[in-house]
Length: 588
Image (tube, rainbow, N blue to C red; front, side, top):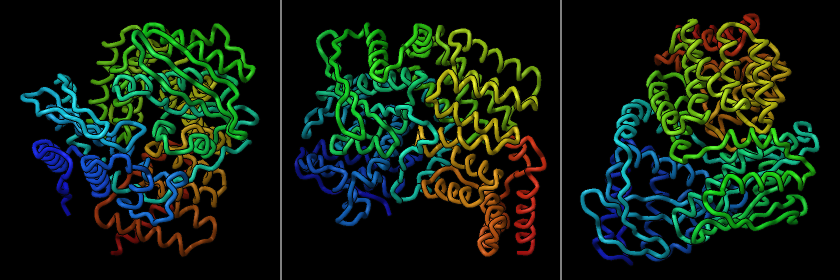
């Protein structure tokens, strides 16, 4: 059913029509991937804002009015509203990078709020400005660069169907993030850096607040005596109505870093505090007044003070590595993140073509920084790993060139080190791959990526028991990220380690969260049930898989296994399950 904007009550007719027309245009675009539920979400928050009821837009009201939650819904324990808002923000951003790049009206949902912002910009003509509650209509001359629009259009037309499918797959179930198991980290403090609250309505302040929180997370992630939750898992927790300390506990944090950022005449004022999650007491707090040009020095000082609070000395060598990893241009950082998101799942050549172009742009924007080269090395190694480029000496030499260039600028570059590990896998050398994974973890112990790839390298080497701990650590450091296949890889490792029930539970958890799933994981589900003697469950899964095969769905299981597992003897039980499903499919 096509969603419609209800009649406006508190705004001039011209502005009502402009906003209604904009949403109608957006809903007709193939580049706006929101499902019906998120479209209803957007309609609701726009309608409430324009009717003068922006103050009522809280997690509870949205959960009950839009998402079908009951009247006893608790938005602090069930994050469904925040997760849907995060996806909607991403879908709006995607639309305005593609079909909406030249639209005169930009609709956004600022971080930390459910109240939409409406911004008219000068394209061909500018509609009248005005205010709705606290949302200001401002003129802006910004347009997406033509090269980026064309590039993303070429890519995203091909993959938009996948993105829409993924948005429908996500379940409505609340996400349960249990406290981190002490066996994973011992007595190490675990810090969650929450998004800083921007004081005032300036969009510049909001961007700066997000940027400095991300940068501090990156800095602390390299400190040996700390573990730091990925900013990807905390970025959506900035709503003032929620309990940030309670959210930190759910993420497994022992401490929460929170604060606010205020724009001043020639810089910023940052008020920041470190809270012990158990006692809810603030154990360190400080105010930093700094000019924009002094931002990096201020971040280093913050890292030193937080480290000293935990009696950790920040050595000069570590300070140097932290500074090597910093971004100087936010636009380059955004392109880098987009490029490395694009390559997942690594099954479409056009994804890698687009990622390569974006990363080459990053290199041009930051020629003296390691990020672009590290990203190119990482993306191209995956292109080769998944059979979309020839695994030749020439290909591997080019990948190594980019990785070495990144390591010359930053010896602790995680993606460059992991790329060298992937290159060893491409050559059939699991032992040095593990060594590169261990180096990546040593340099950045709080990197979810490094921990996950170390686990994958160990699994590839036929050491599933050893792979389990780094994979669990990876998930504990980034528990809200469902786009990556880490839960699946953990489930695979648990199966090969003989922990069949835990493997089944992990694969089901990934499925419930809406993470990546396919026939290869169904084969593992069937094999787990067979190993547990649950043959009725095995049969149900094989019947589902055979129905997919009968409809033309195929999956190159042996090809996939060879990229995940080095020992061919480990493949046989999975291949047996797949053959059973094929026989059932042939009989249909």
